[in-house]
Length: 244
Ligand SMILES: Cc1cc2nc3c(=O)[nH]c(=O)nc-3n(C[C@H](O)[C@H](O)[C@H](O)COP(=O)(O)O)c2cc1C
Image (tube, helix red, strand yellow):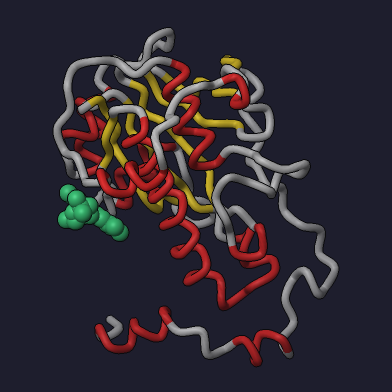
């Protein structure tokens, strides 16, 4: 087991010179991995309202920053599909002419995340586990079991992850970053995740909703809940959302 001090190595950027002289897959001309995981062929797709058509969240940025707080209890009010779309756009939406130009920054524009949603109370969506397809700006429905609220609360180690309106569950596909940054990738991926969740916090404040970043989830249970292998793709961060 590494000591706490040894783990600080992970936070440092003292190996860039070594990386420059090293061989990594991009340098070896290995084709770049896709920026998005393909949707299962059988999954139902839900078109989301165009991000440009939304008129939500128009409060001054300074006000959203002033208000930002972690929220762990929510009203029973559902989120509208427009509100959920706004949150998805703020966290992983495309805002350029390429799929790796997004509302959030990412080291080397590698964007190593997928966004899964446990939908509990969103108008127009049946409860279930969905994934956001940022390129198509669609949701795909992965599954819908009757006791998913209890499963997600247990996997997240937080009851409010099961009884909020929607829980954002982000996975990392580390190879997207490792293809270029090899042994430097872990720090870059962790930094990237922070940007995503901070945008969720601010976007929530702008629509009268709230969220709370969660790292203290159960890795094995959440990977199993999401159907991930835990190696090439695994849960990295979670954030229950509801109206406050
Ligand atoms: C990386 C990170 C991980 C966190 N993990 C948890 C968590 O597992 N459970 C929880 O209740 N809050 C979690 N939080 C929320 C913090 O406890 C919260 O941000 C902190 O108490 C400050 O409160 P504020 O966000 O309202 O300013 C996390 C926050 C961050 C940034």
